[in-house]
Image 1 (spheres, one colour):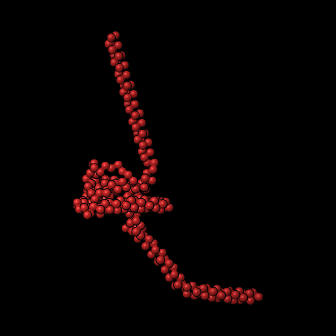
Image 2: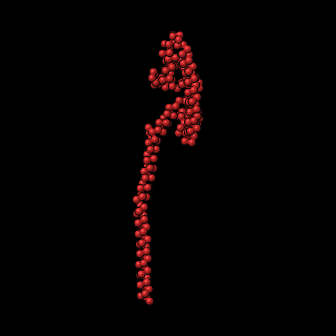
Image 3: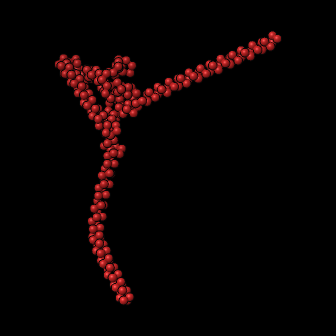
Length: 245
């Protein structure tokens, strides 16, 4: 019986090992058949993702479309209705024609051109829209072209008003668009104003604190000086009493 049990055990183990080998071999054949197709499938997906991120990087990096758009937004002029500029005084008196007002960088040094650019507003645009260029000034002497010059002035005024309205609409659109993007599309002046909220109050508080500290230091120095003077007077009086004795 022991011999039969041993023989049965060996035969059973051999049969089970053959079954395991057959199952593993069949699974291996099926895996190798699908391996190449799965490899290239995942490889193509990886290449598509890499290409997508590469294109996104090109569009986002410097000189990309997104940065060009943000540069244009940063160069966007502020919205100003009126100004307190007197165009007959100071550096503004050098502006004689509408072209000099519109493109001051072509006629003046950078500091004056920057100052003239800061003075741009709707009131200034309307003021200079009614001024003629040099070629129009030459044509004023011709009576036949006076009507054309008047119509040109009206056209320029309407154009200024239309451009200002479109500028306001675009400005509001950028403000609304910048809310979900944490101010990415806000104009630079508006962004600086938002980020500098409270900075002026902190500066005034620090200035006031410095002034109070300087006052207290001045008071302490004056008290010390008074104490020194009183001590000197006391010592002089004591010496005089000793001399009298």
